Structure formats: C-alpha cells, structure tokens
Amino acid sequence: MGMARGDKLESIRGTPLFEPDWYRQRYPEVAGGDPAAHFLAHGASGNYDPGPRFSARYYLQTHAGARRRGANPLLHHLNHPHPRGLDRGAVLKAADDLMQAGQAPLALKLARRDLAASARHAVEILHCNALVHKPGRWMRHLNAYLAALGQDPLQLRRGATAFARLAARDVPAVTGGPKITVIMAAWNARDTIGRSIRSILGQSWRNLELIVVDDASTDTTPALLARIAAEDDRLHVLRNAVNVGPYVSRNIALKRASGQWITCHDTDEWAHPQRLALHMDRVAGEGGAALPVSTLSMLRMTVEGRFSQIRPVGREVFDGVLQVCAPSTLFHHQLLRERLGSWDCARFGADKEMMGRVAAALGRAAPAFPVCANLSLDWAGSLTNNPVTGIHPDHGVTPARAAYRESWRGWQAARMPDEGVFVPFPPRKSRFSRPPEAEVPLNDILANLASPDGV
Image (cartoon, rainbow, N blue to C red; front, top):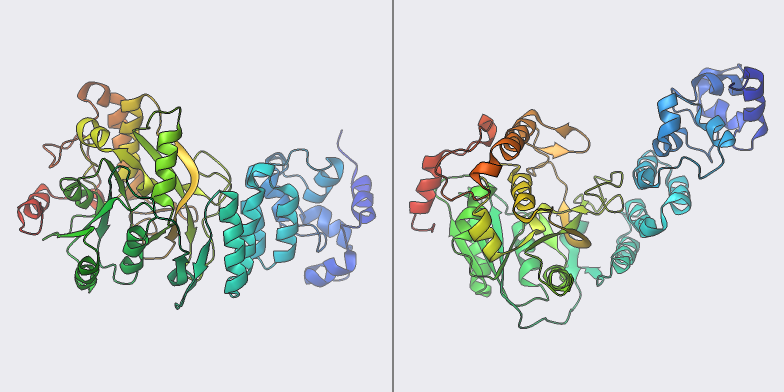
C-alpha cells in the first residue's frame, strides 16, 4: 500500500530539504495556502522544487522509474535513499540542464556526487560551461578534462571567441611512420577553414597530406586555400565546377589520395594536435595487429565556448559529452578502396551508411575510442543543424534525413548481402532511392570529374 496523504505531508514537512518560506517566495501562486500541500499536489507534474537544495527536474531526469510512475520526486527520494534507482549515465545531461536554468552551484554539487567513477572527469565540462566568460579558468578546466583522457593540454591565443582562440602548445613531432591522407570538403567556409586546416597541418604526426576539395564556393574560401597551400606543400587543393556536397567531394579527393591511411576532417572542426598520433597508437595497439578501420571522438562547442549537445551515456556517447566523431574514422586504404569503394553519393548522412557497410565487411562494427580528436563547432550553419537535412538532440532527425536513413538501412538489410558492400565511384546506378534533398545528379558528378581542377 502507498503512503496515506497525511503521512506524505508529514514527510515533506519533516525534511530540511523542504523550505516553506523559500517555496512561497519562489511560487507566488501558493499565496496563503499550505506550501506542503501544494508541493504534494504539483511537485511531480510541474517540476516544483521543495527548496534550493533539491531539484525536482534533476531527480526525475536521473530516476527513470520515478518519472515513469509519476512519483513525487522528494517523497521518492525520502523513501528510496540515494543512490537506489539512480541512472548515472543521465547525470551530466541533467546537471547541465540545471546549470542552464541558472543553478550552477547545485548542478556542480549534484554532478560531483552522482557521476559514475569512470565519468567523474566530465564535471570539468560543467565548470567550463559555468566559466565561458572567464577564459583562463575555462581553459584550466578543459585541460583537466583532456588530461583525464591522456591528452596534452591546449592554450588560448588572441581571437574574438573561445573557438577562434584555441591553440596547441608545442608538442614533439612524430616523424616517420606511414603516410596519412586527410580529406576535407569545403563550401563557403571562409570563417573557419583557415584554423581547421592549420589544426591538421600542425599535427604532431608529420607524415601527412591534406586534400581539400572546394565545392564551388562563392565566398573567399578559394583565395584562403591558395594562400595556405603556398605556405605548406602538404596541402593540395581541388575545385569543383558544380556544388555536389561533402560526400561526392570526398570521393573526388579519394582518387588523389596517396596515404596508406585515410581519414576526413570538416571545415568547422579544430583538431587536437595529437589526433593522428593517438589514433595510430590505437590502431597499432590492438593485439599487435593494425585495425583496418576505427573512430575517435569529439566535443561539440559553441563559438563562445559552451560545450553543447550533452546527452545521456549511450552507444555513441562515452561520458555524456564525448561522442563518436564520424569524420575522424581512419581507414586503411585497401579496405576503403578495394572493399568499400566510396562513400554513398548523397548530400548528407552518408557516414552512417558507410559504417553499416564497414560492419558488414568486417563482421563487427568499427571500434570507437574515447579520445578527443576534434572540438567541433556547434553553430546554426552546420550541416547537422540544418532544419531540412540535419540531426540534433534538441530537435531530432529531420524528415529528409530519416527518409534517407530508412532507405539505405532497407537496402543493407535486404539486398546488400547479395549485391556486396562495394560502391563504385562514379556511381553506375542507385542501389536505393534517396529523398530529393539528398540526391546529387550524376551529370554534376561527371562534370566535376571532367573539370581541369578535378581528378
């Protein structure tokens, strides 16, 4: 049997977590009524807090069982002492939501108390989000987070925003080793591409080439690319005659790639200086045999320096903020060229399609490592934030992206076992239908391949 109403009221009034005077001031609708009775009636459905030391919303976010049953959060807490029922994987997201609601001290206190031991370092990200206007302290907490991942510290240099100020400290060069090709597709990226390119050319792993395909930009991107290419002969620039999107552009660059290993980088990402070196360490370190494909992770941040898209821990989220970074996938050239062939020639979402074929080719998903390869800019102009083609934890999957995903998944499940995982480039035929928003005309692909600046 559940508690009687009188017993519930007595429990609420008897705990120091309930502060009636604070409650009346916080919620004027109580007026001259009984604050305990009001909280009992509305505490579960309205996210009313009983006092400044207890967040109803945080508790329900981290206790799925109580949330499903519509339980009063304070009573549930009193009847089920911490940490029973606590979902530690939801803690960072719940604490960040609390911080955004203006309750930073409580958010930090709860995160330090409730985060799993393996993710306790993620509290440093909450400190960063509380200190976006204090760059020195912000940087110290970010470096503490990176240190917990085994990565070298960063620093801030002059710049208008936190993202623009990110800079590497001096790191020892890694010479020798196999050549790595980094592929980048660029379109109207004048505001970010310079720093993105230099974060690759500044890698501690020196044996690399960077192939940038300018996808028919109409801004000053081509001039920026020409200037940087004149400074470093490891940068090679191609130019599309017609805009075809990032995945066709990657395939065009792949035809020129000369590295034993191949990976990608986006124009709104800043690469940690150890990205390639640490990835090669992981590749060589699995049982003494090189992994033919693997992936690193990223932190998403706004231009001002707030770490965003914090989510519950799951298959692609390690600690609530460090998430799998598809562009960081490192392929051995034989796997990519001879078994997989190319990326699907869609305008968006083709990384996931590629990884489905990888899993089929190898008999298992590509491993992902909790190493911060990139700090990726979370901004309105990105492909993933596009309201027509994007995907974002705040607004979900757009219909066009969902339709594309459903189509390629259907093909991979039903026909790929017979047709194989190899996708030629240029494509001979469409193996599955795409929504109009994802389609790239074959004539546009062929026009770029025939262009003097193409392949």
